Image (cartoon, rainbow, N blue to C red; front, side):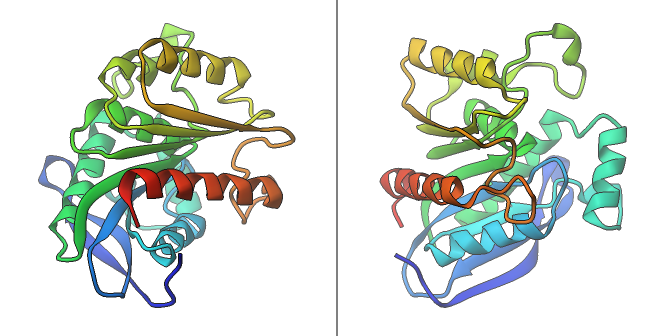
Length: 249
């Protein structure tokens, strides 16, 4: 099911530590209550493709909010801001979780909200989606799209900004989770995905994983040469079926 009418705009929301953040918010204009989805951006930043993803969700009947996780870093193009953030070692997990929690609160406060909210993330955002599912309350569905560093084999990769590997928090996961991965992706590679699935299965979590041959990182992204249309279409269909089951639409 899809809806021709939608409204989209940049909004302000209460972010981590009470900061005023900005986010892209898109919703269907049809009458009635709708579920919400937080679109957690990838490492390159709050760019055109992430905005398009938010509109895609609105087209499919969800109120979607994509928080600008780098808004504290000042003005500039997504490429320039992303480069500054990467050079500084990324953003702290606690800050991202606070921004995601604020985005969830924004969705639930809207008059058209059904009360059901999921999170989806890509690349670093996939890791953040997994982390949110294990750290924040009130999440009804988690979508991890090729989240890197969910599994951390070298403790030296952990630091003050990322003090714990998300895989080590899996026991706290309460929402069902879907994972989408390319088998040619170096991070997460097949070993990482296998370990994540093994942990979810061992702890009795509700999950489904889908892996695609001939795909590397970011194969959903229509603005990259890594895009694989056939596999991306199948992946999106699986994501929407999962969300319809767990959030409604």
